[in-house]
Length: 287
Picture 1 (cartoon, rainbow, N blue to C red):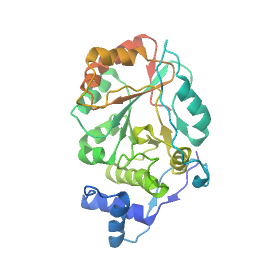
Picture 2: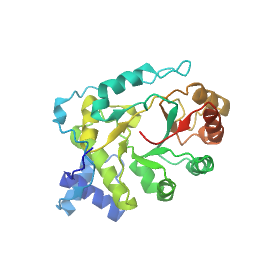
Picture 3: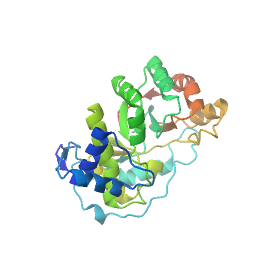
Picture 4: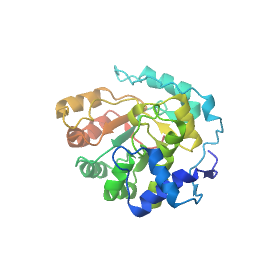
């Protein structure tokens, strides 16, 4: 990808600056546009972001805004799931990814919307096993847990952009969708001196238009080829169920999505890594 400076809207950058330097956060019910309007009253400076452009220049509005219905489906006999393969073939040119290339490699990813007390344990296990992972974080998560985020970075993991407010990106306009990516990017860049390059859509909800937008902002959209119902902290699978779901679905080139709020995930992670490696798989964060 070629590098170029992308001039972002002054309003979005002003909002990001307000959040970084004053410690303010959105009030209940406040929309991103209302937040940026407040920031605009206090600043009219135009700032630049250092997002790395994909080199794909397009009129975003030329792409379809229809939400794409998808799911990884059930994985049988450790075969690569067909829906993620078909989606990658269709949208790969827009810098979107559901699978790694063929081969016995797995990318382990975690979504971080809020902290439930298990991320430190997960990081301990990853350090013990010498495994790197990608952590997709929201603004609330990085704001509330800077020590954990700094630890992720220092220990060689990748921190990814999971949006500012965790909105369904197919249900907001393009300006707001752009803000969701750039405001989060700018906050992390300024607070952690870290440039994110991977974006995960909240709920996995996307349209052709929104992945084109992410690509135009310099991001690779990283989806997944395996996930299971582990996100509800009040309705967690037991350890045996979690272990069986994860290990029975392992496949070549898997991008594995786990939620860090899950105690079961945290408790079985070391055993899962050991047993998957025994089957000849290696873990990677090279996409």
